[in-house]
Structure formats: C-alpha cells, structure tokens
Image 1 (cartoon, rainbow, N blue to C red):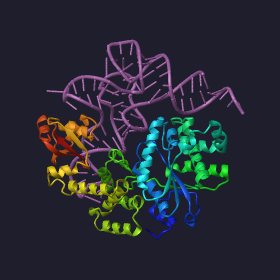
Image 2: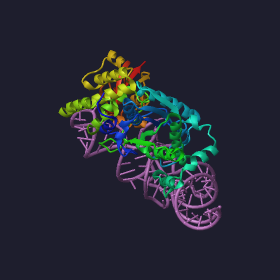
Image 3: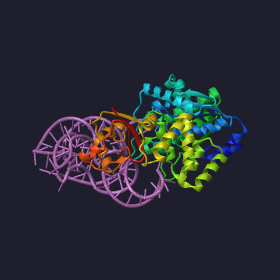
Image 4: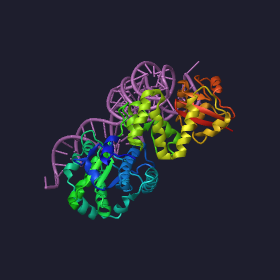
Length: 419
RNA sequence: GCAGGGAUUGUGGAGCGGUCAAACACGACAGACUGUAAAUCUGCUGGCUUAGCCUUCGGGGGUUCGAAUCCCUCUCCCUGCACCA
C-alpha cells in the first residue's frame, strides 16, 4: 500500500506520542510481537478507540504480530487515570458482556489481519493473593507509584481519595505485559497516550522479573484542532462504533461535519488511504473548501471500515436526499420509505402533538426541552418550520397520515409514521 | 482515634432564614450568518396539565409561619495531630 517503512508511516500519520525507543527505525529491523489492551467498561468502543485500532492496523500491515487484549479483568477494577473520583464497580456479568462486545467490534475493524484475541481475566481470576503480592507486588516500589500524577491528584488536598483497588490498577496492567511476554513473547506494548504510565509498569516489571527489555509506543489523544478539545464527541455525547448506539447515518454525519483544520490529520489516522491518495483529496479540497471533498472522503472511508461498504453507501445516499436539496423539495412517501432504514422511526397516533413526538424521537429529553426547541425555531415537520408555542400554531406542525420527516436542529432527522 | 474544614442544579463556583429553580463563568443545546465547517452575535440551560404548580442544594431527622441557609445524626472528602515506622 505504501513504500514507507513502518517508522516512517507512523510518523507521517502522526501516530507517535511517546515511545521508549531511542530510535524508531528499530521497529523496521525485526518482527515484533506487540500487544494492545482495550477497555471493556462500556458495551461499545468509541471513535477514540478506533484511532487506537487504526494504529494497530499499521503495525499489522507491516507484518508484525498482534495480540489484542480485551480488559475483562482491568475493567472490573477501573482505571483511575483521568478520573477525579472513585468509580463505581461494575458487575462481572456487565463486564463479561462488554468484553464480548469489544471482541466483536475489534474483530470487525481489524478484519483481514491475523491477530490473537485475549482476555486478561483468564490469567488473573485464579491468581492467589499471595502469588500476587510475592511475585508481582514485590517488584513495584511505592514511591514512584504514589508520585504518579493522577494518584497524587487524588490523594492531595482537594482530591477525592483513592481506594487500594484502583490504586492497584496499574500493577494489574503491568502483569498483563508479563504474562503476554511469557506466553507469546510480546515485547512491545501499544496504547493511548493516557496509558503511558500503565504501560511503563509492564516495562519495569519485565525488566525486574525477567531481565527482559521491552518497549512502549503510545499514540496521541486525538484533539479537535478547531476547539482544542478531545475529538470524538458529538452533540449527543460519544460517537460509538455500535450501530445500535450510533446509527451508521449519524456516524457518517459525524465525519462529514469534521472541522477543516483537522480533516487531513483525521484522514491519516482514521483511514488506510496512502499518502498519494490523501494528497490528491487534500488538493481537491484546497481548491474548493465549500465542496468539502476531504470530509466526504473521510466519512466514506471510515464508515466503510466500521460499518461495511453497504452501510456506507446507504448513509451517503440518505445524506444526499436530505441535504443536497435542503428545503427545496418535499420528499414523497416513496423517498421517505427509502430513508426508514437510515433514520430513527417514530411510530405515533394521529393526535399526538409535535412535542410528544420530539421527546419520543430522543431529540429532547422532556417536553419542556422540546418546547424550548420549538420556540427557538429548531423543529420542522416536512420542512415547515414552527416557531410559535400556541395551540393553534402547534396544530400546524401536526404530522399528517403516513410518513413524515421531522428535523430537530441542523442535523437530527427522524421519520414519523402516523398510524 | 481526636480536632477543624467541606459536600450546591453538566463542571467550576456564589448564596449563609423569606425577594432561590438558586448569581456568575465555562460547557451543552438552539437560532442567525456560512459550506451540514470555524469564528462571531443572539437565545436558552430541573420537571409539568407552563400568567400557575411540583421536585431539587450529600442521606435521614428536627427547629421555624417559612430552611440550600439554623440544630442533631449518618455517609464521604480534605487538613492537622495522634497511632503506625
């Protein structure tokens, strides 16, 4: 796909945050067995995790052996990093379910490559306390642990405190590295920038317990260049990879709406397009910013990777019919029926007010909120915008029999089916 | 364990007996302008059967005509001392 070496490609794509290598070309000189752990504290991964998966894919394309870990054990404990207060423990069933979800999503995104999928619960659940304290704990010195930023923050003035459980998280993760070295010969760990400290726990442990040199590379947290915030949040919160949580249409829309500033970077991270392909799209984009060629390409490619070719095509088609003729064209019943697979569908009785429908669609969490949206001119039915809150004007927004299109805000569409 | 300090609506943070659904800032959301972008401006930000009513200020109980504000108690956090080295 490219004649770059691994180290060159990683740098070009902007995948390197911190690394224990003095010289990254060491990566090019041998085949590595690396491991990368994914959190299982939610039942779906997000686009943030997607960046990490794409990171792994670069290594895989260059012929390195991957061990992908779902954190069945670590998610039972909870990573204190980045949190300012103690987490609520999740039940074993929940985590087991999440691990299954994570495994499925990982397999889908990493499809086409060979890799070993493991769950760290397998080697931790039957470990004895004595074994843990003697064989593992003995290698960790308290002083550096306590000095870790996120732990220091929790312990110091104004901190929320930290339990021994969460405190031990990093040791557990270090143990994973040790185990994967013993079983698979893994000597490299990849992770997110926030995992740097936890990854180093494993490096230290390997050195102390096995006299083995090991390495870590972390990828940067993807930042939205326009806002300076963490990338990957939409209006409704996180952007999930699970189509049930973020529909392929919404997912596609998310990428299409990405800021100009960052598109090039996102193309490099979230797609597998080569340098020449990306250069070509960016050239087209530079000529006509309003054409948004880069965003379109990005949305297309990423949706393909996560949801497949068909879903990507469907999302694109839905987008065209909703936006390209924005406001000029009332979609007929057939066109609306075609959109039913892509947009949320709200079933309703004739007589239900628009407020109730908006709440049921999930675009507002209460009637009060729906009312506010209405008064702000955010709601339209079949392209008719409503502004008034009186009963008479409310009636004008009443959907008719059959299929209707409602729009809330700029980007939220739903089909309303009146029985 | 003892002594102080603290817990407020997404976050930070005012309020210290009625005028408090609770200042202000940030964030979020919406409108205008644009390119379904950014910036900017404007609005909005507990719920409801919305000129009114209801539920919120860590949990529970009390004082009072009236409590986010006062008292008791529980939980959690912080600081200092003690304990432990």
